[in-house]
Length: 292
Image (cartoon, rainbow, N blue to C red; front, side, top):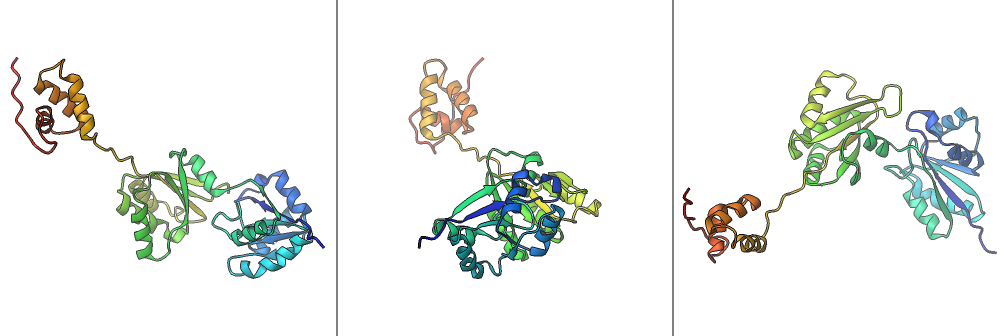
């Protein structure tokens, strides 16, 4: 007998405001044969608010692998499973990857029911570049490991998004200020889409000052957005310098040509002048003084 093809709906649920749940997400939950939830109590309350009642099973980081065979058996019978986390989009710093990988390997359907995401919500209102970004999840909880990770990320050019516990946010900002410099921009987004949503924007130094003045700064659920490292300006190579000198040779005296190229490239004038006279890049030669 050929096994039926089941389906997993990866359902995004509100991160705070119930009105953010899409009609499609509600339909998925209403029609699922089973809801696999990170916390059945939390998701059970959500279903109750929606006026729904569905069979549920817990699926969290401690039992996910032990649940896979059971859930694959249900998929093999052609059932539909709605996968939800406590809030936002499942698998984004939440359990579910092992189940999804196993379901795909077994030939079952997996479809996204997109919706709320703290990562994208924070990124969209942080006031920092969004053309390229990366999600880093939670930083290490231990001080030494967190500081080391902050140093590793100090040169990341993309905007970075993190989740952070409220009791560690000040330490994290302090560590990033030490690793990236106090002038790096960031945004601390707390309680996104909830009644007390607050967005703090500024440099790391300014955010630490705000934290010292606002008792609510380190409360609630926090998403941190950090500006990427500035682009490293590389000096033009020797071939570029020689090409620029060649273009100016017929128009300007050697000393003046060297001065112009030095200004364009950030090289020392004496070094450029030596190259114009056939010297090596590291050599220096005193350029004649221009009269006039």
